[in-house]
Amino acid sequence: MARGARIACAGVLAVMLSGCAEGSRGADDPLAGFTPDTLPGASVRIDEAVDGLEVGHRLMAAGEYELALSAYFRAAAQHGPSVDVLSAIGSANLRLGRLGQAEQMLRRAIERDPEFVPALNNLGVVLVERRQWGQARHYFQTAFAVDSGRSPEIRDNLRLALANLRESGYSEQNNDNFALVRRGEGRFLLLATP
Image (cartoon, rainbow, N blue to C red; front, side, top):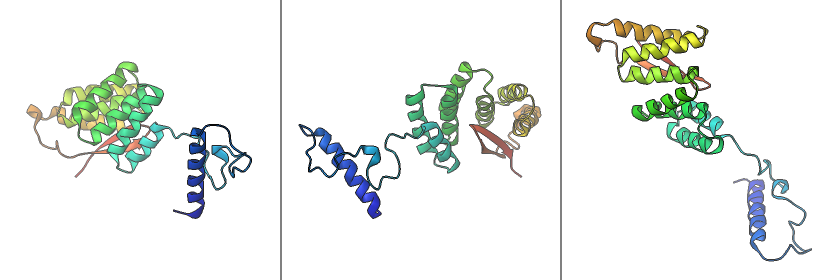
């Protein structure tokens, strides 16, 4: 730990402990006049908080899905169960292979906002993983329509779902050739691999 960081930590600890003591600071207190966010050596204001949703997105991009899920739960505690938070929790569960939990959260997100494209697309991905091609097609079509066809990723997802739906008897041919790729803002791309 760098010397400046140790000084800042020691200063923060001293301020916190002095707040617990009875009475006020004396004139000989070396920290008199400093507030926790202006301690010497402190480079970040203590009152700054990082949004759990943003932290979760960064952790998802880094492949730390369990940590991302924890960050998304913190975001839910901060912001409530918004459509963004529910969709993010569903996406993290999907990456962890928890399809039931992912489906439940994504459906809740869609209940809150039936036109939230990332949740529609990601629910389609969950249904592809469960080999429920007809339902997957429905959610991809809805996402494609709401998005006005602007997203080539959603169009590709829809094409893949339709191709598998046409397979006679829902053949398992090509079912394991899908890869999920995050595209930002809670959007995921379902790619077919050769």
